[in-house]
Length: 114
Length: 112
Image 1 (cartoon, chains in turn red, orange):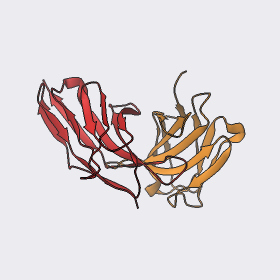
Image 2 (image 1 turned 30 degrees about the vertical axis):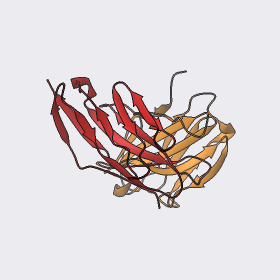
Image 3 (image 1 turned 120 degrees about the vertical axis):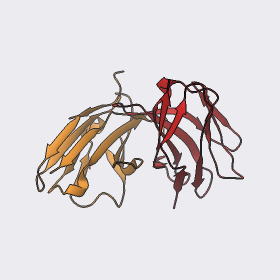
């Protein structure tokens, strides 16, 4: 079945540090890939997405590239801010189903200190 | 467009009681999803509606769980005879296309 594996957390960084959060997936076919963010007390928000191999999703300074050869979708940001502190989830949509249900990783908590 | 609303935000119930949660999707969204999120885990798919039709249910949705979406508008998720293992955040999401979800803030259920 489909699965998403995220690196173990939590991650603590200083402001302006470089961020990489690893995500790999297993799926049949060609899924769409997503990063969602959950700020404290809020619902999940779509951060970025990529729908085919070599696509790069980007938003708010975050980027992730769909790498089919390594089945990865690592999230990067060049300079994190305190306001980026949140839980980040990698997810894929079922490429075989008609309803695009999402399979999520466990999530990783990012804390950015001033 | 006020987003996806879920009610209540928090629910504490005694083991064995029934609970019902409500989700109001974005008005023109015909796709609606329920997910469950336990502590330290990502959300897990429970069920999917297209308009009023429930088209898919996860094996996670035991016979104590039932979901409805009458008239293709709001949806309810009922859990009968709650167990401590049902304690989780229950998330609702809606979309106009089959991806591009908007999630609600969730209902946190605690079974004591």
